[in-house]
Length: 296
Image 1 (cartoon, rainbow, N blue to C red):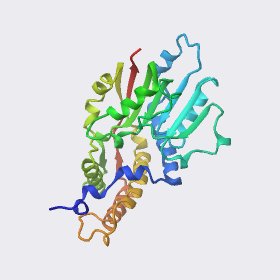
Image 2: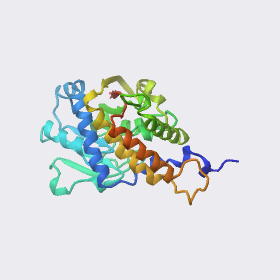
Image 3: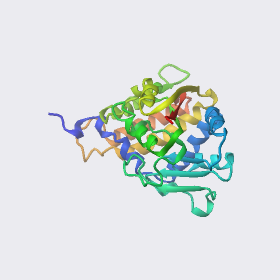
Image 4: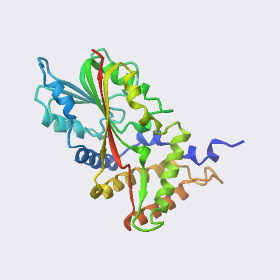
């Protein structure tokens, strides 16, 4: 009988990664934000901005779930009227800037937004809910828990803007044959770890239908191709994640004979860095934006 520690896949725990972050993770989130914004060309997709501009008589309320260091919200603060009320929620507040450095209409709060017990003053109070890079939280291709959290927060006729890298299309390539061998091996390990924990990316094919079934009348799913001149920056963004993942893999002394140990992972990662220094790239090919309007 195979134990948990004998499984290559189960040795990689990405969920634990998201709860153990430091200043390097915050720096990576700034890089990721810049890459998303450069690729998309908007903070709020034009269809949402146009809808919000029609006949508004009350202050706009926007929530960013999993807000990290607040980078997206701060862009919103520069874009939207000063009367807009902007809220950011994250389970790990270590990345929040000092209160004195946050715009006056932005409030950052430590909160697990997937918890069904939300304060009454938050439920049904937001015009827009924004989420980004929630893919690793989707289990067994079921977007229901995330969509229910969004639906609870939105006002009737409120809007969802959900942005993801198309991780179903993750690829590694190089300008010469076999120049990305270790990169592809690492991607296989990460994907296998995800499968063992119920994290696959089949849901990209059904997310529009899942949004429609979650009390949203209007849905749209749009792909935005990455810019090839930014493949290197995307590669470095992913390398910062993959380097930290090593801390989630047990050492050889703790799991003797396991097919994947921290020492083996770190050796593979060193080869990945060598390949990327020689021109190999890792990226998702596209970003995906999912737009939904809650039923009125």
